[in-house]
Image 1: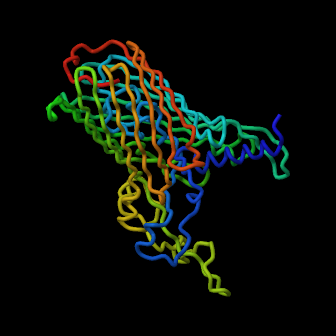
Image 2: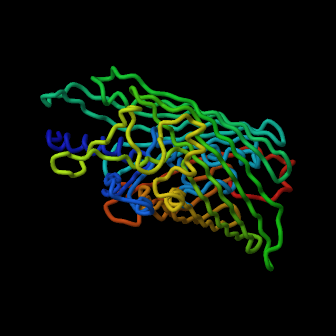
Length: 430
């Protein structure tokens, strides 16, 4: 039996994991501080901590081991069962008629022992150029003990979030395809704020729009190679409402490219590069009230009596509609373009493949310190046994005492019925 102190500590850690870093894992303690002074001016804002936060950030967690082992690249990687999350248009380039896969990811193991994400994906080919796919992402936040104002135990809840996707991918030519996906998102973490399980779940819907290009084989020195490129707009959807406030979901733009070089008949090396940017407003810098007695700035925001809104010193009002928020996200950072550029996360990945049956992967993910400081290396391997693929990955953060430590993923997938009419196209790794 755990002591009350141990239980209390565990619950505090779990709630920190849920609301502070549940899915985006802002791992540094200084990432919990806000821009605090109206004395700042001009370019100073670009160097101050100002992370962008959204509701249901679990939608941005890498759901599979293959891309997860390559620094979370995915816009232009080879098509596989998990393509819906990264770039749904890749599904049209799969070589099989049918596939299904499952991934388990123990999340934030450095904080709590029972937060897990499960991902199931699959696809089916309609004809030579069209493929449909579906996936289910389930994020379990474990068990939380509830207490009243006096500290008495009043029960426990098991909050969770899930997203259900349905995707369609179409080849427009031998080398180019587009994709669209619909997504239903549900979250029950709001019940933590109420008594027992009386709180209501929050839900919303979103869409993905994507495109993918894969070249024919071409000469690269004395070798042959294939170039790929991809662009995906994901989670474009309505705000989600937990109580009285509506919150943006993690609408995102992912742009990437890749190059696979065939060293000989059996050996190949691929390198990928992705750029990610959230398409939601950046938090502005608000003016603080000044204590008339001391003349010092307080922690309370100043309110404009004419509008009833907070007075903005730098940046733009984030309380806007979806379309305005997407457009505004490219030019609303308090620190100007210098800060805007820091809102672009960079992923890079490398894969060595032997005869399409064994692969070794590694990668690096970089997010600037002022925007969350997720910076980590990833490693993984993959094996293929006829129709069965087994992939694993492990994440190594660049700093010690990071919540992302001990993050691993295991993916098991099955691909069936090779589509013979596409067998002459450049082979890719599943």
